[in-house]
Amino acid sequence: MEKLGKPKANRLVFLTSPFQGHINPMLQLATILHSKGFSITIVHLQFNSPNPSNHPQFTFKPITDNLSESKVLQGDILGTVKALNKNCQVPFELYMKQMTEKEDSDDRISCIVYDGLMYFAHTVANNLKLPGIIVRTSAAAGIFNFTVFPHPHQQGYISLLDSMAEEFSTELQSLKLKELHASIKTEYPPDAVLELRAIITSAIKDSSAIIINTMSYLEREALTKIQDIFNASIFPVGPFHKLAPTVSNSLLQEDRSCISWLDKQAPKSVLYVSFGSIVSMTEDELLEVAWGLANSELPFLWVLRPGLVRGSDLLEPLPEIFKKRVEERGCIVEWAPQQDLLAHSAVGGFWTHCGWNSTLESICEGVPMLCRPFFGDQFLNVRYVCHLWRVGLELEELEREKIVKAIRKLMVDGEGEEVRQRAVEFKEKAKLCQIEGGSSYCSLNDLAEHISSY
Image (cartoon, rainbow, N blue to C red; front, side, top):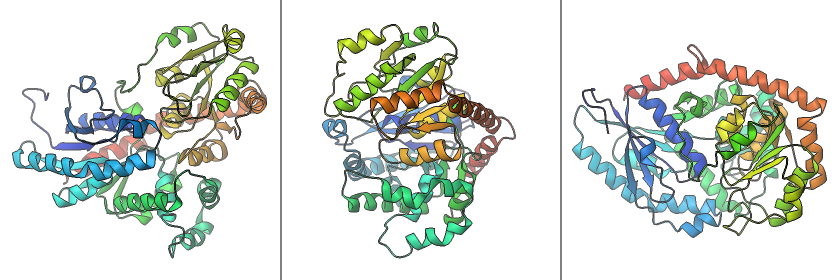
């Protein structure tokens, strides 16, 4: 509900996608823009819908998605994204038409702000003659990579990268985009992946503005190159989670008992382990992770969520011998309040899949990372973390002896101490972005003025 007695601001309609790693940053961005005086309507799907009680200042509207929950649980991300864009356009456009018919001059719709995976929203915005602002919840370099490689067989795209290669400075050279693109394997047909990338790239090109959850000092060259390619204004307004009040939008129940366990541990002694909300692995891989943690002889806090093991919705039981081995120095929970854990003084390292949200959260708390990517832009993020920023170490294989070696290198050895010092430096730089006069602070003000001009 809107506060009584307060003049209504221009209304922003946010369209979210149903993935945990996308819901959080979209609601954080909505909170940030609400603090700038905008009224907010959150349009969301019935599947994985956010909890409206966490945000009483917003209006929430569910729309029909006709999505099979089993399809999502099976990990078919590409099929899910395509189904969402096919199923949701009509109900979303119908709702938007109803809103525009009812609006008055004190509460007009300013624009549609949509998750980049929900690219159909751009068509709806065009049909209703409304500005459409796309939000990228991943790294800026991911947009640049999409643009260079929407279809590797299409004339001009590889040559674009080759012709620009000499202009690349340390940042983009370190990412080795061409090599990275060729090395990433996917379970989906290549043509289907490339078609989706091309569609998303088209939506980015045609958007009225692009909001990116990043900081200028992290991706200075990538942001410059993107602005050279696109006509739309680009606003690096990150990190969203630090610019918005902390409200949990977790789809899973957080087990906060692990915080009291951390309180009993020595400073910087615990390795926090979490592979995000949608990564899956085989049972053999899970056991390699488990014995790697056990054999490291170091304390750890492991998020072992239901569904982490491929093909199973249930928490896979670990061997009793493992449980006895680690009962004094291991804490295992199904889900955890990650931001609070990373800020805890006992956490000295983060073993992560390198999703962008986790990467930003770790940087903002100065926690060095052990990186093992699984799919998609996680491989790009690892290049940033380990090769350019050097605030983490890469683990290339889930094999227990290599896991032990990597954990001890990060948490105990001299190389890990160097990584830790750089992580602390990056934390301080992140703070400077957020304060008055900082790059994200200024970009946010520019964004609010840009939206107000519609």
